[in-house]
Length: 139
Image 1: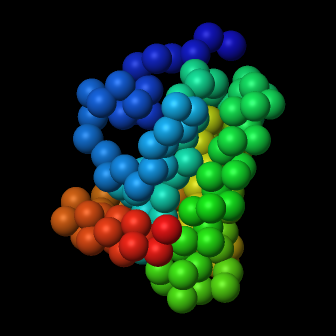
Image 2: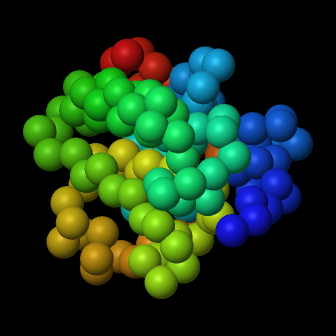
């Protein structure tokens, strides 16, 4: 499968589109989801150009899992929640809407997510900035 380097996450990685970044290193970024399922919904995105988990190198996959773990702990602290939903979708049939591997880390339950649906409503940028600051303080 040919990677589409014009997908929205590739553009965010190249700073061609704005994002509310929570973390950035040589291998990945963590951003607030602009179409969140719950307050604090964030995305772990590798810099490696890979559409699905099956295209991603083992090293990058391991790094993304470690970041999801770190960010999940920050969400637990920032939102005073024990339960954090960590989800990763592979391909359109599975519900993947952006063709670049990413992990959703969401302070919500699966039941709530299923009722709301995936990627339905854009969030106010100012609210995202406030939530991002809350999470940063918890890191």
